[in-house]
Image (cartoon, rainbow, N blue to C red):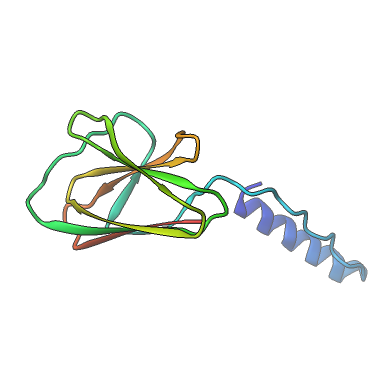
Length: 133
């Protein structure tokens, strides 16, 4: 159930509980999900696909990645041919820092290597951050 649907369901439960004097239904506990981005700075999120890195200029950019989820994630850099390189496991609640360049492509994958999303370092970025939850 997506966030908007959960909010609408909760609002209906509160309204119904208030109007009829009953308590709203308790929320169900969902199992852990694969990490999804929640905070992005200096990057553009892209769908998984055949993206390749481009070097816009020689400006070095700090890329920090914070995995606040309950599952490990793998971060890959995509070379100029679009191939995955430099896979690094980021454990649950772990962080990683990289030096990268504007125009470079990074991919966040689940622990089994399935692409979740790709990110391109912005052309005007001075720092970049990807936060997962």
